[in-house]
Image 1 (cartoon, rainbow, N blue to C red):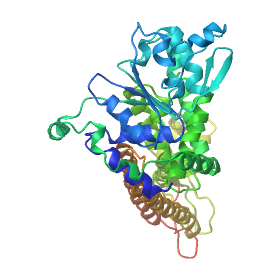
Image 2: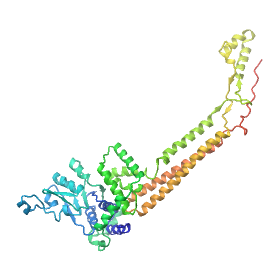
Image 3: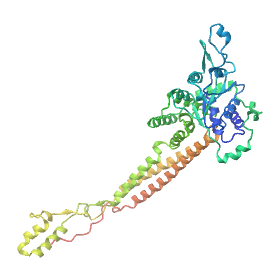
Image 4: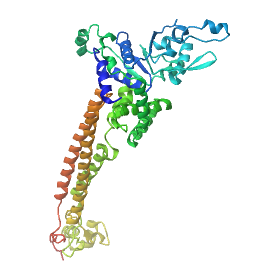
Length: 483
């Protein structure tokens, strides 16, 4: 089986369906992976039509369909008791034509059966085995498509719910699709596929796909992202069983193998929300979490780079506003007592010669004359040497190189997403659009950070400089102290 054959099959199966493309494709992918799908939605939303079309995908596959109610008895699902076996004191059923003998099955209103039937279904769905009398029968089941209006909350229902790897919410068509729906009167019937047999999948092709999926690799970046997601879900008090994570890994491998790829791509994680979340709101939350992280490494994330740019901006502000000590031509600190001498002279004029000592002491607040000692003064804004400014601009140039590398990597990720979406059979268009928008947003953020970094570089270049020879410019001559 190759991708082209699957593409032709999907085109046939989707004929006449309105706004059910994704539900059908994911249901088929689940069946190819040997998993079960639960369709959740109100009556009249083509859930049974989807199941019947999945059956058409498999050549000569036995099909079973049943609507469950609270009055459903085991005989309706598992077959009647064998009279001959009873005569021989054996409790066995005739399973031919019933669920244990089916390869594809559709069970409508799966949660309305009693707990005894649901418990019997647990082993059949998970282990593909059915306890028939004293023996255990191996079942040829490929996939069960279940349907329900709502999922009840009880222990048995929760265990049964966990057997369905894919949970797909199926609602009424949108206002845009309503007109198209009315144009396809009668097209929900499976009779519209006269050429379906030309591209159906046989047992050998399914086995070959299973073998190929086992050889598909799960790269470290995919495993790391799944580990992060598991930790996030745990923080959100959302439990996902280990069994479900293992089945999810197999589904991802099957998706890659069906498209001829040797490894799972990070974009395949767009399938994850349908496997670990139970309703539309939860699935959207997981999808949002994924789309903001896929394609962006932590080292190149805008928040991290923003902090680096902000640090340079803060440093530039500090250096612009910094004052410097006053140095003389020899490079030594200049001391000044101008202010103290001026205060002393004014005090002498006011008090007269007789009270010079007392007036001076009162003026400077120090009887010993300590306030008149030489003091360092701040005469100018700080000036910076060529080496300092070169070091700062070199640091920003390194940041600009880092931003350029990030943009190059981002461009490669955008190309990767576009290439993956162009050949993906199972991609959710909404997920692709959201991932593309997120990458575009990251690109805009990087452009803004680059502009800020360049502004900071210009600011460092414009800092007050020392003389060309590295000496500080001469200080302003001070007025000499009075005699």
